[in-house]
Image (cartoon, rainbow, N blue to C red; front, side):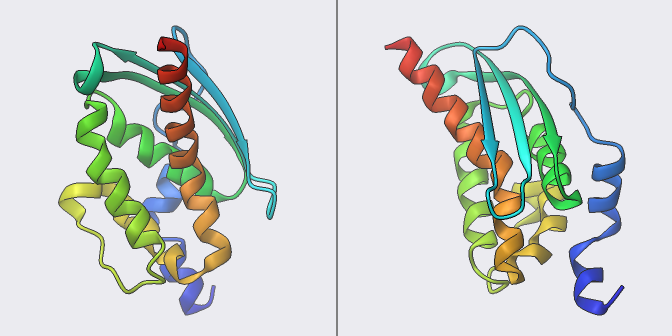
Length: 153
């Protein structure tokens, strides 16, 4: 592999791709969304199960089926691990920081305390075509939150 691909496919990314955390669709769930990245064909079906109300909604389960490149599958694994057991409100700054770092083309360093293993995905920020692959699971999570909110109204 060339040097730029080495920075893209870190050992942690490869590990999450080969041994994904929380993969497989499970019940119960409050929302199910399906997203496709039309530029490369990556797909994710994500199920989200919450408990509680309002800002104290806790993420009880995130399950998913991800098809596509190693980056998108690893991103789903890392995201699911970050989300589980946390409140939606706790995850807002994590998601915002991760999205900002991914959109920075490598100019924003990721805060490992905030995004955990997500720092391993930040090499993709230098490759615009890969940014969509990495952000797809987060966009599916956001869509599932909207679906839950819409159903609750």
